[in-house]
Length: 475
Image (cartoon, rainbow, N blue to C red):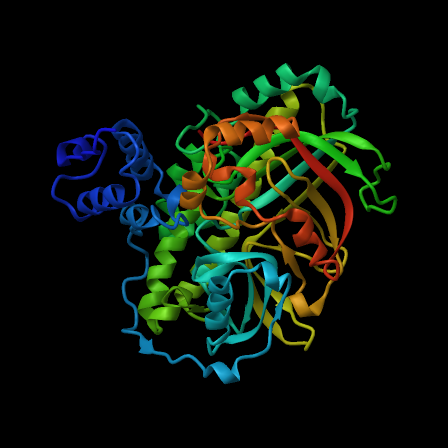
């Protein structure tokens, strides 16, 4: 195998200025972690990172390159405090928090949660059964704080969510119309840096925040360009079979199989830039020890805190509008409207009343809202079922549940551990057709969703299942 060689002139052609910090970093990272790959693959990957850095900010290896392309734009705020050094509370004094499915959670995720609970503003927390190490707050972490919001506690992909449409069509429609549904997915979805040509801006772009918040105003063109598309990584749009198992399901559905459409994505580059911008401001105003620096917060009484809160809510609504556009296009492709829709987001912060009666800002980074009677969708993997759930409102979890099966293997490790042949075998065995996708999303990289669900019977009731059959992801 020829030795990988990358030169500055190769990178300059794809947006890495010759002699720059990001060019040197890119060469070092690729030579260390991707030296067994061919040059065309590596150059193509680096070009994707340069064009859509927001899709790589949670990748263990590639995020250090991506972050060089996601420097926040200048904010409307002209001055910040120099920031006060803030100490974490002693580990022996942190509030107790509940961990679900603890024997399947890696120590790194628990350590991150312990650090989050040491913040002086923290009032409660919980770790969900799908938890794994993230950036700042672990994915699967729930954190309640007093009168503050933590941009990285929400995460880069603000408002990332699930949206499920159920159609009054028998499940065997999938068998007889597989080609039509496959074609519909190819024609009516876009991922990564591929977008639709559009003429009429959606209603969400008329929101006052696009006029009143300078950071948001600068992102309006990006939001319009990416509207109705999905991110890379683990984001998907898929047709499958919903099996309603609970007669009292709150959806007015009979207990039988249905054709269904499920999507997973967030607020795209729009939300990622908001997260980067206000995380920088939070770090300037709230100087924490290195272990907790990504958990810097903004006081909600401050101008920056109020701005981020408004921008975060806008990004959540934008993510929802993107899902609705995807479902609208696909519904039109086969001439049916859904008879039921279930939607929930899992990267967000909510103002809620805790069981103590106190009001707190509850951050759910990769966790599903599960207040009493609240409906949600918890996916498995592309070969495992997802679950339609109804929250029980358990105060120990701060009204939360897992947001999926959770990764048990990083993307880099999955690529090194499995082959394309093994991926095809797993899909064939499950009867799943995959359009796009990569080995980093191989089902074996995820935890057993049945174990995750068994660990949270106190948190949700299961109303039904969703089994993927035709899956569309980024290439």
